[in-house]
Length: 291
Image 1: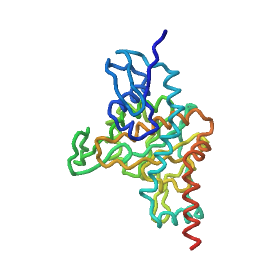
Image 2 (image 1 turned 90 degrees about the horizontal axis):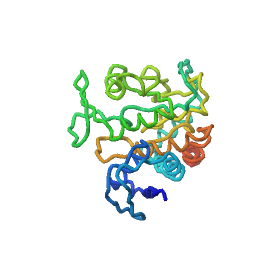
Image 3 (image 1 turned 135 degrees about the vertical axis):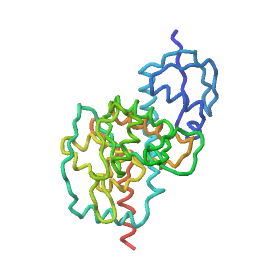
Image 4 (image 1 turned 60 degrees about the vertical axis):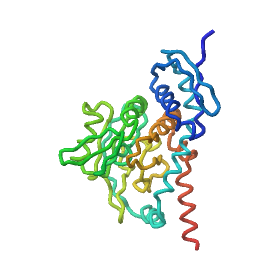
């Protein structure tokens, strides 16, 4: 009888914080071989498997379906840590304003689209030294630390999504950093910079309405600051800001959620139902304006 690979139950954040369990899920999503003979103990499972056992796609997909929504909801909690009362009130102004919709040409091969932030989502620029993190230094002398699992995330997600980097940073700096990840430009389909953002009051907006060639129902955005998407909240997935923590694993959770939701034709509807960010923010605005 074929031996079944037992995987940890990642419903609990405590379980994924176990480094051994985390490496298991990274290997699972990568469809790689598990190179160990050891047995690991999690909260609810005794994990044992053979060296070199190939994880099958069926097991991988089952895991993604079972745990994707849980990680999506955990990620959704990140927006509350950054959002201030004045930010909430700004959303009302943005919705009433006539945002510029200059067309941004996006070539698409039929995949869903992931619009991905750069600073504090994939990297962290900081003068203070950070231990146990990969880093690069730009030509201007800026030290940039790489978020754990960033390269892995881009490689895994690029098989299912067209990845567009949309950053509010300047192009020269951004290209230097992005070339570290994707020098040959095979993983990232397009790069958008500060000049592609739309100004609205005190905010810069990454306006998905400018992507005329792609239905918004096919677009998701992963960013540590959802204020950039105040006019497209149904499309956004918040991620905690990366500030140099070597034990950060939020991109692993984001990958599981993205691979799960990619199975739906209309990702904006499913993302809105699962994360409920627009609903919660608009309810908070109503409370603020009532009193």
